[in-house]
Amino acid sequence: MDRKTEYICPSVLLFLFVNCADFRISLDPVVLAAVQGIVAPVSLELRSGQKREVLHVTQNGEFGFEMKLENGDAYEVSMLENPSCVLTDNTGTIHGAIPRVVLTCEGVVQLASLWLSVADLPDFSPDMTTYNPVVFVAQESTTMTVTTAYRETTISAMLPRGDDIELVSAEESGSIALGLGANRIAVTLVHPAGLDRRYELSLTRSAQFSEVQAISSAEAWDWEHFEITGEHYLAVANQQGNSNIYRWNGVRFVETQTMQTRAAVDWEFFRINGEYYLAVANFENDPGSQLYRWNGSTFVQVQVLPTRGASDWEHFEINSEHYLIVANLYDSDYTIDSHVYRWNGSAFIQVQAIPTNGAFDWEHFEIDNEHYLAVANLFNGTSHNIDSWIYRWNGSDFVAVQSIPTHGARDWEHFEIDDTHYLAVANQGDDSNMDIDSRIFRWNGSAFVEVQAIATSAAIDWEHFELHGAHYLAAANSRSSAIVRWNGSAFVEAQPLATSEATDWEHFEINGAHYLVVANRKNTESRIYQWMESGEK
Image 1: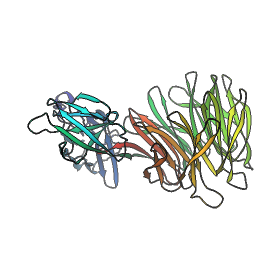
Image 2 (image 1 turned 60 degrees about the vertical axis):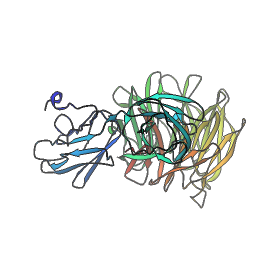
Image 3 (image 1 turned 45 degrees about the vertical axis):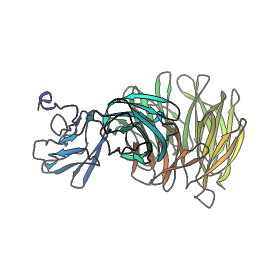
Image 4 (image 1 turned 135 degrees about the horizontal axis):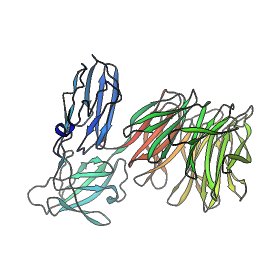
């Protein structure tokens, strides 16, 4: 088929093709979707027998399924919750030729309308929230004046037709559930006769993380996101078998390299003098833990570091010197030193030993140009109810400056909110109970003091991230995990997420989209979630 002659459509139409050049239900082996003129996210589901695959399309370009079909296989392509689009020629049986599927959607329409960004709504956070009032004054058919509590802005725009919108005059009251797209609120106003009327609206917006991909894993303990020359990667640390590296192909993560690891618990990515490195923490002592360097296409081993039940690596810089610190958990005894290493130009050499008790995590952070390390001590051989410690750099070594009582501490997470420093500890449990609070500490100028207790269940990890100006923490729990949001004075639950003995959360962004990946230790699949606005799929 000649794409130049066949693939021509007006701007108001969105076509998806299933044929040799465009959208292949894969006989061999790549399945492509040629997408043009997209104005809202579209999700397509391919089913064949017991096999199922979902393709999420959010931008123009070529995308595709990965499912392989053979001659004689029946197939059906359906659309998930997009009533403004219509599928045709979307069912059949493979008989040599590749079938053609067409998805037709309503496109851009020119109305008295605008794009209203989140920033234009004071105190409008991206969860179920109501902001009232916002006043619209129409001036022309495609230009409107937006008045908020703080300022007045004029915006001219076109946008896709959304849900039915009811206009409410300033003398009346009412609420409107807005259709959302990307990071902007799409407000569609269809005016009655006479444009110079005022409307007072109550705006309700909803958003949450939704699953977009499942990746096979074997007792996964950690995910590490990193970027090399514009390409996005994820590395998983599997306790069983080998670990793997995945690369983003524009739609999903696909495996690109298998790494030989021994009960891997953690990956740490960093850069030295333009070179990219990955360090793996192997819980098994033989041969120790490996350091890998990127050679332009793959990671190759360049050093083996002696570790003892390694559970975490942390990379940091002090005065342009590169350091690694390992958390050593166990070597016939839980009372074991963890070690600091410094880069000498060609390898890491040990420069300090720090006594720890079943160390599971290190967290580096800076306050007022001072360098600190926090260690999460899990167990001393007798009890989980032990102190974890904070250390400060004195110019040559790290020295202990504060002890904090913890209960089977697994993780420290440092973050800042409005120039105030916080630490969150993940408590796995005391000596008799795994349903135990994890705690938030705030820096008071000389020490960290507890400010909040958050109910968790055998918590292993905290992950802090920002989204649309709001601060979040994701907790990896033994049972259902949860995301909590900062409300100005404390963290409150924003979204529960079903997980299977979660051990790690990792937040990352790709092209402005926010993602979370979870390591499920007691499941053969780990899962990736994307932040979805209301109406997105």
